[in-house]
Image (tube, rainbow, N blue to C red; front, side, top):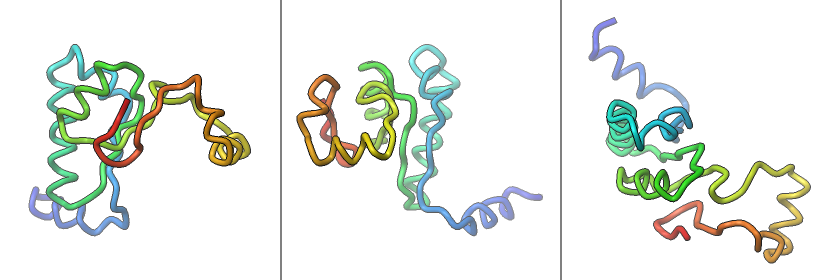
Length: 112
């Protein structure tokens, strides 16, 4: 398949969000190739007007770098370990139940 056909094929997929795999996020701090892949995924997502989410954010350095690349939707242990649906419902009803974990916006530019 030629590159032009691949681009057309990519635009036909029924999704509107690209997820940056945690393997790239983990390595982007110390591996320039991984950082370039993250940058390329962000550029592709923005170019195709898709949402972006980075998974596996575990450190402040990863958070800072992913934000610098232009991705502002994240998930990972930096904010919270995985929780069950029941636990999530409880936490959403009782915001203070998150008090021992870092807080941040899932959307937008506000993290912290």
